[in-house]
Image (cartoon, rainbow, N blue to C red):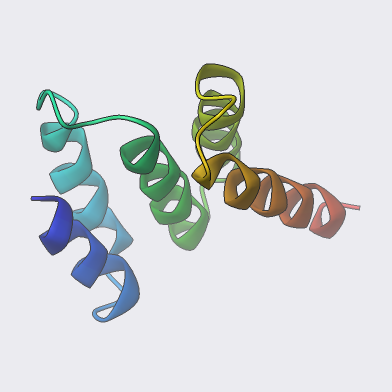
Amino acid sequence: LKQLALLYIDEYNRPDLAIECLKKYQDSEKSGADTLYHLGRAFEAKGDTPNAIRYFEGVIKGYEKHPIRYEAEESLQRIRSSQG
């Protein structure tokens, strides 16, 4: 599901389908910071800024030592600077 979601985000421009896959994948014990980060990416691609922010903040607050935290911070900064 995770790999399919990444294809939907990166190759097929179908963030709506990526969100469905990632939400199902969240039930997996392998789900974690990466899943939240990619949910943020998918919601951002869909134009749903509030949910994108929520998921990026979830990575930042919940996974302080995870390397993907820095990408989530950059994404959050980009969104906030584009909002004005």
